[in-house]
Amino acid sequence: MVFFPAGHAAPINHSQEKDGTLVADWQNQPIALVFPGQGAQFVGMGTELAAASSVAAQTIAEANDVLGVDLQSLMTNGPAETLEDTYNAQSAILAVSVAAYRAVQSSWEGDLNPAMVAGHSLGEFSALVAADALSYADALRLVRERGRIMKQAGETTPGAMAAVLGLDDDTLATVCAEASSEAGSVVVVANRNCPGQTVISGAISALELAADKAKERGAKRVARLNVSIASHSPLMAGAAAEFGALVASTAIQAPKMPVVANGSAEPMTTVEQIVAELSAQMAAPVNWTGTIQRMVAAGIRTFVELGPGTVLAGLNRRIDGETTTLTAADLDGRLPAGGK
Image (cartoon, rainbow, N blue to C red):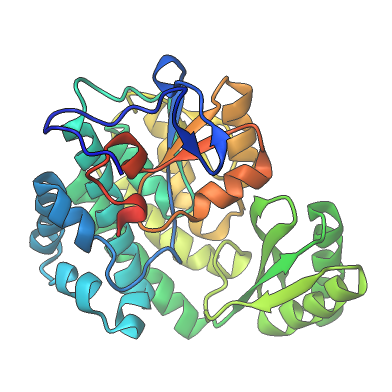
């Protein structure tokens, strides 16, 4: 790893490589920042980042102050089951994502000036902070409540989710419709993560039937997720309405750059669009494939993933193999990749 003096980032140029392929000089091209969602958390997240950047450390400490909990200790030491609780995981992922964003910005001479930003589900809140549409403190408070409301919904209206590999989305949507009809309950396509990797969500009986049907139609694998919450399904309608009231009472500004929405895969540029997106988000599907395709159509070929882990890099590569997804470490050699 090449280290650079304080105040200077590590620019990627034509002589550097990533994943074995030559990377174009991204500084002369439009870039988009992307932020991960729930599931990216792990014990130790943010520890190396805070050690490498005082700005990142201050950002994580700010989360402790705003929420009144020792989130930093939980991220560093666990236990894993407490960190993975949706009530804690969402705040932790937001804190590390914003810390990575601020660390990169503080070491850069000038502004990164992304052309667009986007986040996967929960990651939309990080994207909105980066776009100056939502303050960091307000985002922390919102996602803390989002986690509480979602956890409560999982207890009062239990559901399930499963990842389906190797089946196209249209066929899977048909499978879900058939299973819903036969089971007398609901299961839907929830997350279009990338071609060949889709998540379904809904009532347990309908989901189990859909899983069997998906295998019969040629799915390579159906893996039940370790959650009791049917996120991004109609079972979350009540929770979405409750959360929408909180969103409506939160100060939101027009973003300084377009934020591509999960639901529509279209750029949001107004407060009204953001409020509608966040209010519907819990019960609405995530179209990450469409989100990346929309940004590629707008001329983006280089993405920068900021947050714990590098899950989006893999998804982005499968959506469009001509794109490159960098990390904080690629922009500044002193920072760890994936918010470690």
